[in-house]
Length: 310
Image (cartoon, rainbow, N blue to C red; front, side):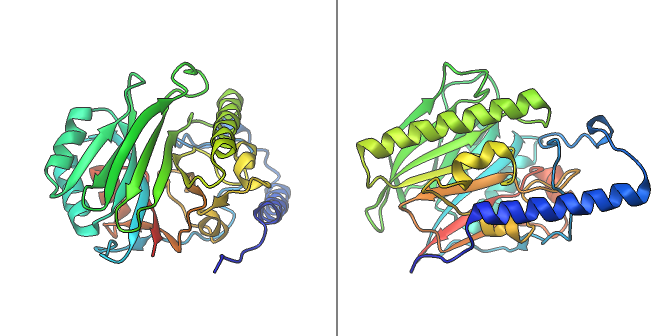
């Protein structure tokens, strides 16, 4: 049965109106005008006119177990400046062994050698990494008993200004169901200044035009686009996916319920999963540690977003 939810563009508008009214009330009460430069520097995400922190945040799921033999799990995980410390690889290995995710798109890979070492330390996993870009590459970790990778290629390698990190596309077959997925991982331009936002607008449009071309060639194509979009769903750069796109924004309900994937400074949901012809029954944000400060020191300032198909 198809999932029933409010049209996403209406939810975006409602959240924008409520947050704008709250902002006006707060500014009127305090009689203080806050400029963009007065806002805290939060690294990856600091958009102008953000609707952040307008209500209580839902906490991520603390869990030691996710994957099962009867489900297929696909995740996006920005593993900050990987590896950020000497303990990162063994720590991530223990988490991956516990969670048993089938396929993980990873961003911010500074060392392909260490990603290979991570996969080698896991029983039955392989890794692959993007060829383009000079730093912070994209990659995948996947279970070989669950996934067959048919092909891989970098996208937009000649568009370094719009895509500072080339997107990474793979075709992968789920062995249990024999479904073939076209999966595109992205890590779009960070920061909240106008030029960075314009670059994300251009990147999302270019990416949407690309997948529309794929659909025109194969109307039945199964698509998953996931990664660090560096934008919340109410930001204008996300409109190719949120307004009449024919795609399912799988992270929409998490955003509506005020979950977050980035948590250093201003908490925000900027890591997303978008699908077409591939149904995810459940999407969650997970953490292997109850103490996020411990998690951040060991692994990342982003939490993984996990989609589960039955």
